[in-house]
Length: 90
Image (tube, rainbow, N blue to C red):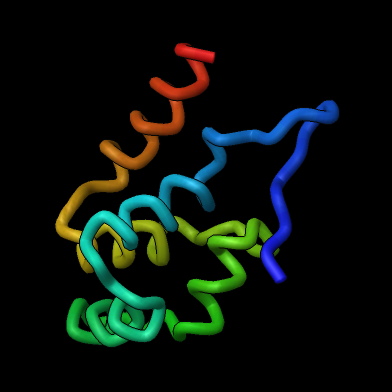
């Protein structure tokens, strides 16, 4: 069951977890496929770990965020910018 991340009673669409899931889905990757790609980048982030990140149950370390960005073919900067842009537009 998926939970929505809420802050002050309204969904937070700019949270890293939402951006991570969105980027993964844009690429057409399953959580298992993304996990395999992280291993190719040199640091395994398990499918279960990706699930916890996407649910907002876990905050990524800088290394994890970098590896996930690499595996998604993007940068941590662009993922953070996506959070900031959505927050500014809200």
